Amino acid sequence: MHTHEQYSAASLQIFLAIPFILLFVLYILAVVLSNRKKKAWPTYRIIAWNLGILCAMLAVIGPIADLAHTNFSAHMVGHVLLGMLAPLFMALGAPVTLLLRTISIPTARKLTKTLRSSRSIHFVQHPITASLLNIGGLWMLYTTGLFPMMHENMLLYVVVHVHIFLAGYVFTISIIYVDVTPLRKSYLYRTVVFLLALAGHSVLAKYIYATPPNGIPLDQGELGSMIMYYGGDTVEVGLISIMFYQWYKKSRPIFSNGKEGFAINNTKKFTVVGTDIEEVKRLNANAGMSYREINEWFAKQQSKANTVPKKR
Amino acid sequence: MTNSISISSDPKQNPNKKAYAKQNMWTGILFGLGIVAFIDEVVFHQLLHWHHFYDKSTTDIGLVSDGLFHAFSFIATIGASFLLADLHRRHAFWLKRWIGGILLGAGVFQLYDGIVQHKWMGLHQIRYGVDILPYDLVWNILAALMIIIGAILIYQTNNERKD
Image 1: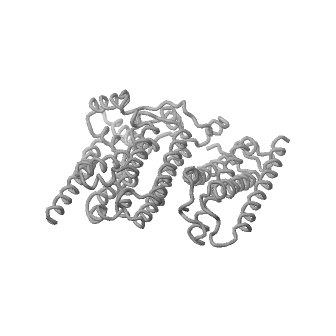
Image 2 (image 1 turned 30 degrees about the vertical axis):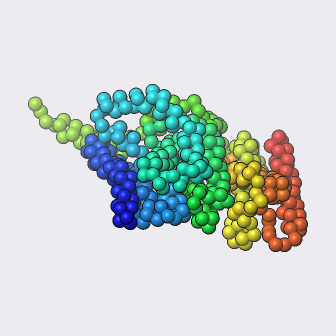
Image 3 (image 1 turned 180 degrees about the horizontal axis):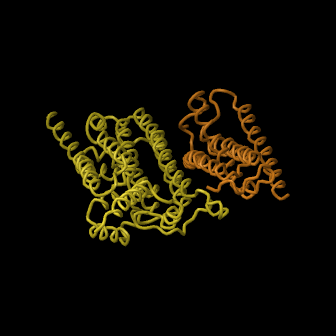
């Protein structure tokens, strides 16, 4: 009896871990392949992605996942890891950008075209939809009978966990634009939506403190609620700091133009991979020669100097 | 770079400061709000354990208000830090106006916390098991004082701005 339960729990964990192992392998493979043709993919992105995979793995397989079936605090630690920390780190890994530079240019063009025109992607990536999927999903999980049901039904368990991760990821990329971002909203817009989503998360955490899901003892509910509340805060501080830092970099003053840099500017033109076209033009105009260009220029001068004296 | 174009050695002649008067004030207000919420969390909740994470008498609206202000306060603190860095970067920082903003923001939030959240919504009390009246008085009078001083500073800098 007992061994059978353990067996199914183990297979469940492995089943949830497989996608993350695949993502880990594919990412490394893409880095190796694309580095052959293009400049080296940044190390910090690789580190971020792998930290994200690690967080997700900790949540779905191993001691925390084992304990999560019987212990609500462990479940909450898993929830913060899988639904918040893993998505944040993985978003910093910019997987879609990596994919685009790995595949052939015609395929990449087709893909960006789909990303740009697909209404369903825009819909899901809209900050409000993403927040509803994320926070709304959590409210459904903890305030209805879904939570005890999830531990009875294996399929439901998988669906809920996949949803927690995906909704967390979509929410993260709807707030910070690191990767390819088809739909863009202003900083102020995203801050307001983020504020409401975070408030929803905090309120839910305190609600669980008083009324934990069915079958959870009150003391476990209290501890789990505080893990959700403070753990959530910690991750969200990181998320919002990244967004404000992006604003800070983008709004760097252009002294000849007076106050222009301060305004939250929503009229900028972006390519689908998120390049601010005007910004690139401006930077290029001021840039002069890059290190590589200087080297090339020297090489040319050298070869000229070498070839000139030769006579045909 | 040409950062130094618009910077004069005399701060009163500095046009950036006045051009960014609004940002100076709002940066202060947001920061003040954040500071009070931070002190509330660290000192009263974590160190003194006077405040409670959850009080059984909390109303639903109290819970929502607490969640909103909790989220708002730390977003405000982080946002205000970046706005402050932005002011320094533009050589537009105005200390007096910024402090006025801080006192105003801190006072308004503390008054809201003391009157609306503690008393009306019954979120939690300042301290349990003691006569609460002196605590409430100190809390709210302090808040009112901060609002008054903050408002005076903002008013004065407003006049300086128009000169």
